[in-house]
Image (cartoon, rainbow, N blue to C red):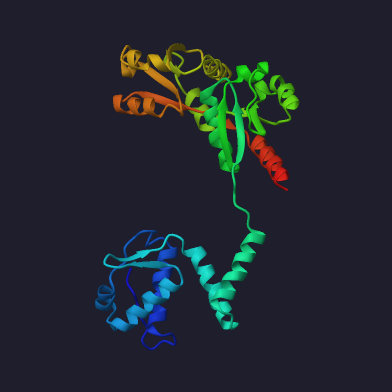
Length: 305
């Protein structure tokens, strides 16, 4: 950026300069962690005195835009919005004649009264498909601060194992069979309904009927789900099934150009290998319907009250 100073303007030069640098930071021209030119470099560029440039940096630091690191330089501050608000509060207190220790006491009391720590809610993700459970978890933590742990459904369904978390989450497929166990254990059971992202549906639907589809799976249940989805999309291809543990042995059994792989988004290492091999693949993942996400958010908000 180039600093333009109007020496005939009403604002002092350091005010004009600090405002332009602050605007560049807000616009993203300088990003968090970027090193700013030195005071000497700004002096050379603008022709301003060293004391004026130093006052510019002082003002930017007071407002939380930058931080000075002794012996290293001046850097764009990452938490400037929050710090600016605190600086403004501090300045207001000083104008009212309040002492620093009194400001600190009032601020501490206000924080304790109005702000609660955002402690995650412990939740059990119960399903028989680890691939799908991973997809669900990824979607749910976007809308609520969950700390989720995955459990296989068999022991829970039989009542021989009771997850300790107060909140249980499962898919619509398994909701009714788990509900009696949850009620008996005094747990809150939430239901999610699954969907396949439209972009993946379009990509799969556009495939030729004569192409070979390779399915990499970890569980039989995932294989069942993906087969059902392919049937709904009208796919009648020949399938080449490859269990996750067999991938290393089977990945070169078929020429790369002769197969299109379907792989869960959870299998990051296998996806990386497919990229290295130049394989054609579609990353398959389940989403959670918007209605389900809205319902779960509403339920959790009600529980917090």
